[in-house]
Each structure stands twice: as C-alpha cells, then as structure tokens.
Length: 304
View 1 (cartoon, rainbow, N blue to C red):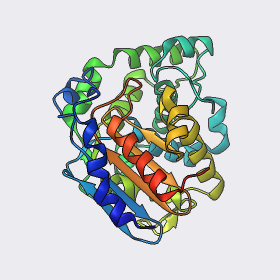
View 2: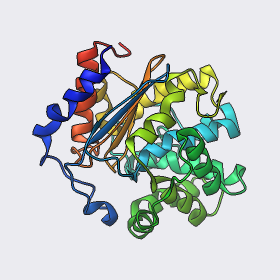
View 3: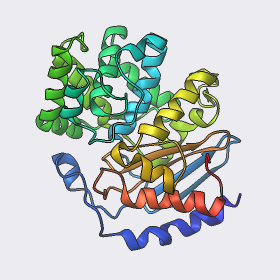
View 4: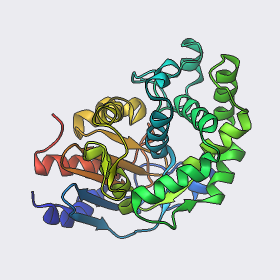
C-alpha cells in the first residue's frame, strides 16, 4: 500500500471541511482551540510510520482514554467486569441519564460516560495510585515519557462536569459504584485530560492492531481474545450514536473523543490516529472521520 502518497493527499482532501463543525465549547478549556487544526499519523505493525498535517501539538484525548482504562480494568478483573457493564451500542448520546435509568444502573457499554465511570471505579478499587498507573501506562505504550495531564483541562472538566456527577450519583444509588464519588470522578476527569499528539496516540494504539502485543513494551498487554473484544467494542460502540454511520463509511474499529481525536486500527496491519477539533453533531471529529474514510477508500482495505 502506498501510504506515503495517501498521506501527501489527505490534508488537501479534508481542507474543504475547514470552518465546518463546532469545537466542544461546553468544556471551557476546549472552546478556544481553532477548529481547523489537522494532523494524522499511521503506524504499521512492521514498524513503518507515516504522518500528515500542520500541527503536532498535544491535545486532550478525552474519551479516547476509555480504551486504555478499559485495558487496565480487564487486567484487574477479567471476565467479572461484564457483570457491571454491558457490551451493546447505546444509540443515545454518550452522557445519557435516561438510558442509565432505564437500564437500572448498568451502563450499556464501557465506552460511554456511565460505563467509563464504572471502569474508573474498578481502577480505584484495584490500584494504589490509579492516576499515576494510567499515566505510566500511556507513557510506556506511546514511548513518550513526558506525557502528562493537562491541568487546565482537568480543572475545566471538574468545574463543568455536572452531568457526569449525576451519572456517578445514579450509579452509586444503584450499587454500581463502590468508591467515593469524588475520587472516581477525579480519575475520570484526569484521564480525559491526558495530553498527547496524534503520532503518540497512534503508537499507543498499535497493540490493538497486533493481537495485543506492544512493540513499545516488547510484551503482550492484552491476550488475543481480549484484543478481539476490545476491537469489537470499538467497532460497535466507539463513536457513540454515530457508530453505524462511521462503520458504514470507514469500516475500522475506532474510538473518538470530543477533543477532536480519533484512533482506529486495521487488525494485523496498522493503527492510525487523527486530530481535528471541529466536531459533527454526535461529538466526533468532522475532518478526522473524512480522513479515515479517504484512507480506507483509497487503500481498499477495512475489516469488511
């Protein structure tokens, strides 16, 4: 596959989308980021790297972090995890209280906010210092040891996270949150505020394209079975209530974040990360999804 030529062409392909979509202004720290920034990187399992775009600045990965906290939680609790969180697409906004109430405090999947709060609760229960453990995990996976939390974003998340607090309280009231609510929320707000660039994210995701084996760590961090499950959850739940449209257009397991990032994998071949802050109505990067659609259309390769 001629990735080099594709990555030369992608910025021009998405340029028409500049000025469209909206940044996530409900999080004040994200409201001032220009929506037309764009960057993309692809890492192959054989060790090749390709990139495009005009910015390598770090951005808060937001809900992309849910993939990595879920990986840690799988290691902590294994199959018992699924007693507390489901594995079905939501079909509703990522912070829906109505759905959580309808399902009596069992989140539909771990990649929506309520499910991620349960995962954070698992990490608080099992790790002495879950914020440090998560940060160390991301540093080793990405191979970049200066990755950190964006303190301004974390503070902004905490100050405006009223719906997430409501979700946490509802989970607690239904006996599906075991630890102190503030401690769980603190971890959740900080995981969303991890700042990385698109190349670091692509590298951190590469194990999901490589049967769970991390070349950065030189070991398997997920079993083949766990990797299959993670990729299936990304394919069916990773882009909230736009997941069907994304699968139709792009055809890759993926996870988005309202910071404008999207990670995706083609199992056995590559991981890819793209960043462009302007979002469509469901909270997914407008230019990012278009770039990934272009990638799979030109290569003729997807999971389908």
